[in-house]
Amino acid sequence: MSGPSVVITGYGAICALGNDAAGMHASLRQGRTGITPLELPRDLDRLQVNIAAQVRGFDAASCLPEKRLPFLDLFAQYALAACLEAVKQAGLEDADLRSHRTCVILGTGIGGAVTQDNAFYAFYAERSKRLDPMTIPRLMPNAAASQISMELGATGPSFAVCSACASSNHAVAIGLGMIRAGLADRVITGGSEACITPAGMRSWEILRVLSPVPCSPFSKGRTGMVLGEGAGIVILEREELAAARGAKVYARLAGVGMSSDAGDLLRPDPAGAGAAIKTALDDAGLPGDAVDYINAHGTGTVTNDIVETEAVRTILGKRADHIAMSSTKSSHGHALGGGGGLELVATILAMQHGFLPPTLNWKGEDPKCDIDCVPNEAREAEIGVALSNSFAFGGLNAVLCLTHPDYS
Image 1 (cartoon, one colour):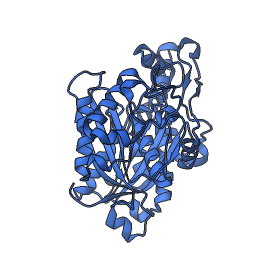
Image 2 (cartoon, one colour; image 1 turned 120 degrees about the vertical axis):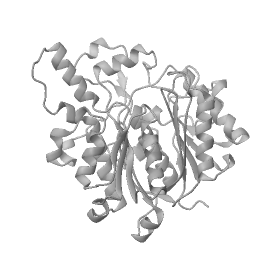
Image 3 (tube, one colour; image 1 turned 90 degrees about the vertical axis):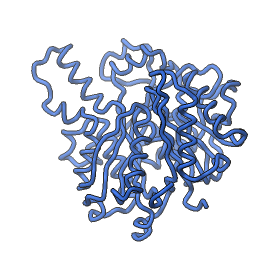
Image 4 (cartoon, rainbow, N blue to C red; image 1 turned 120 degrees about the horizontal axis):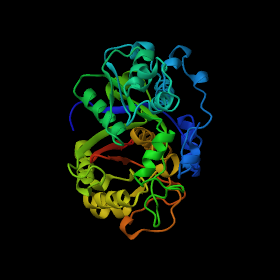
């Protein structure tokens, strides 16, 4: 651990659990699911899986600048909406944001999936010779980060990180590093995804990892993951700068850990996941015994949940018997590159409000997933130290370590 302390002074979210962080908090606390029957504009009858965790009731025109709407794919709309919520909560002024010391670093696994799907459909199925001229500006993965930087006037580095399901956590880790290195004072970071399209759903079906029923991470009889969408955005700031302007601190980003399995493209390795967990704790200067809660990657696939349990037990030893490790994907679905951003916000909410988010749809213990996954109902608990895990296809692992503002 080196460099200045970094704190989180604002956060925003939009997902199947609610169109802001407050809605997400209420749903997590009450154990509500965002997994519902799938709605798509076409080709729904060609799919075998007909559920997803989709954002509902979101009106971009009511909350986003009109001048930006023609340039925004759905994933960028979500990112900008969550960003504006985080900025408002952080109490940042234009003078704070319009600076080369303010950066925007966002994760996404796919980028403008809806725009790309519509363009391909028009070109191949409808044989259209003229596509929407805004297709490229909307579908490029850096579009959300660029649109946020333009809207806020943030002239520091602005870019996207694309590493599948680890994208958001990698983006946050880079943001932490930039502040520690003295390259930035604040970083707007997290991730966004809007990947639920007809072809996208079918592509995941072919991998045989989608569940036809609401996912049940760490449970016996689990059948796979459920796709989700949305954005989770946080404001990272150098602690002394946040203190100077009287900002409220919601959590400290104490450490990060990253690793690569360097093995199979699709099958995770507990050694790689464990290395990221250990590195995050080492970076934070904390022992494994300090951890109170883990927001698991917890996809609900047979292999992932076993590997994650093994990794946690290998690194934390007997402490794993006393740690709650839940998967909020059972509520808001797996938002791929945006998943880590949503799970970071969920972890901050849990820490701030003193509760453990539940793992929904749990049907009984799998002996190979012998951890306390907070089955089916939230529990009251004080959280001093938390980890948030993201493990991606390609063997890419990124873990965040958070501490409560009062933790010492």
